[in-house]
Image (cartoon, rainbow, N blue to C red; front, side):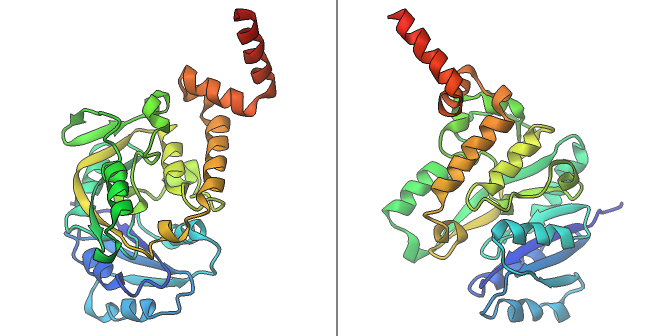
Length: 291
């Protein structure tokens, strides 16, 4: 049986606290044909030295590349560009893959060639010092990203297609209906069709990427926790706090420009009111005439 090469892509920056656990989980995969691709954004701690110690103790190729910092999206994209695999499996430096993660996800795409991307549920690892009322509220809202969609399962999979954009739930929290990059796997060739991650975004670039996929192909969510996603004070989402308003405004513009005709009537009207002066005038005139 032929096993296609899978590139486990690990973008890093000062990740010494958790990188060993991430590396251990990558090397413990049951899938037999892997390479590990590290793209480092000029770490100043011992991240790269820790990764180097693994090279002599595994037959899995570990490639380390140095990337000039230019935002998280640029580092993710550079990691993909260095990968030689048929499949791309992201693993962030503070997260963990369960041993059968890659094998299960590749199996889904091999069985369903028409799917554009596969994702999975995730278990949350919460650092004790980060467990507070705010974190508990976050877990309540974002613990299960697909809970508001009420999707049926099919052979252990939730299938999402472009009809998602018509749902009222599409613009309700959580906006990310698919998952963080550690939860996804896709064919390397996908970026040739839809492009790379947008490098002008900091908070919403992962699900903006996934929604581009949905315009072409279905996305499968495996109804099983195959990764562990860590919540801690130094994670990128926390460090980027304060930049999200700009991202969300750009996100609205992206939806209006690229997804307008996929939306339901209520959401179309919202965007026309927001971005089209002519539409606003028409709506006001209709309202006055109806009084």
